[in-house]
Amino acid sequence: MSMFNQSVTSLWQQTAVPLSQPPQLRERMNADVTIIGAGITGLRAALELSKRNISVVVLDSHEPGWGASGRTGGQVNPLAHATPDVIIQQLGPVFGPRMLDAYINSASELFNLVKHHDLQCEAVQGGWLRGAHCESATKDLQKMYDGWSKIGLDISFVEGAELRRLSGSDAYKTATLVKSAGSLQPLSYSRELARVAKSQGADIFANSPVLNVKAQGGKWTTTTQYGEVVSDWVLHCTNGYTDNTLKGLRQTIVPLISIQAATRPLSKAEYDAVLPEGHTLADTRRVIYYSRKDNRNRLLFGSLGTAESCARADKQRLLRSMRSVFPQFCEEDLEYHWGGRVAFTPDVLPHLHEPAPGQLAGLGYNGRGVAMATVMGRVLAERVAGKPAEDLPIPTTGFKSVPFHGFHKVGVVSAIKYFEFRDNTDAKFF
Ligand SMILES: Cc1cc2nc3c(=O)[nH]c(=O)nc-3n(C[C@H](O)[C@H](O)[C@H](O)COP(=O)(O)OP(=O)(O)OC[C@H]3O[C@@H](n4cnc5c(N)ncnc54)[C@H](O)[C@@H]3O)c2cc1C
Image (cartoon, rainbow, N blue to C red):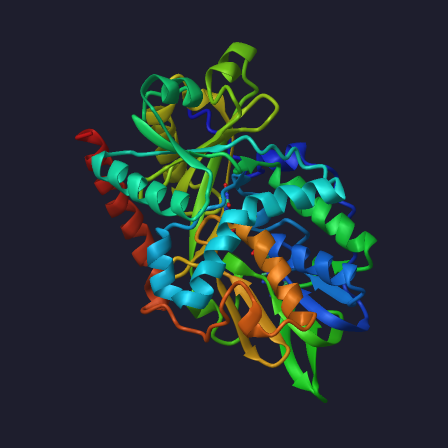
């Protein structure tokens, strides 16, 4: 009989700081700003707005951190997926360099925020190893190193025996190391953002799915089942869980599933043998492998999958993948499995939209949102506080639908299988 634990409860739920459970919205309220989505994006925006004495109501279908923000690997990675020259080409000479700055500084922005507000979320700025899974990926890493080091990112190469020592794995011959990166307990981070936003005056409501947003008398009315909020601004911070509340937004992203497993508590010897200096590890695969320790006594390992519940086939794939990096672990060692939705964009960059005066949306972190959602929340708050769109670090763009969006579910499952096959073939000949 399989020893796979059937529970979809995440490890983070077991170890997070307690949530001070927000009430359900059951009244009519007025505020300057309504925020839909209590993940990192929405909560950072709520915090920054409240600090400026701008009144905020945050509404979530579930509770703070319920979405990807409370389920992530918690790796705080300050790097885009492309090289800087590609991003400059995509965004031009004004927004290109600003976006690069936003990326480079994103991890430190997060760690400074944690320090400033004393957020209890096990944050450690311990560095990130990104391993090359094959020969051509080594060349890509070199290009990333060349481009990002030239514009000021503290990035270096680690190879051979030193990489084996730092990762605790033989899977990679070469990796880059980004020192400003790190990790945190993501559900605690989300709950702590909610706590400080509330302490600064934000009103947060749980179990309050937004049904619609309508223009009425020069303001926006946001309606939930039992209440409504009338405000000047509405911020859509729903990332991979975006529905049809804001017409056309859902079609701008492809929601993919990221899945993770966490081991049983490890012995000290087992724990010390992997990532002994507390680095996080991710790789260059198309169907990425990522892992870290939980800063207590467990190892986490993740990849892309097909179901948020981490279906049986996903669990088996995850185990195979994990054993190719850390062969010392077996099925019985994995106590937790879970998954969540991330949002991919065709240009692999985060998107900021202002489809109508008073409506903003920030989303599309392409699986690297812990740091960039923290930045996006701040940028949304700056826009509301009066900064012109042309002065923001992220360009404001129109909605561009992903082609054949309706077919993405079928397409994504086949794409994962295909890309996994190609990753494994590349790795075999390395
Ligand atoms: C398993 C997994 C591992 C990951 N690992 C990493 C990692 O290691 N490093 C990294 O940088 N990134 C990682 N990511 C990505 C990162 O977690 C996300 O990019 C980030 O958390 C997005 O934050 P968000 O606030 O924009 O969205 P979310 O946290 O997804 O929040 C969206 C919220 O919107 C709410 N919502 C949606 N519709 C409505 C509605 N109509 N009414 C009210 N509320 C609504 C949802 O309930 C949800 O709480 C991972 C993601 C997953 C799922």
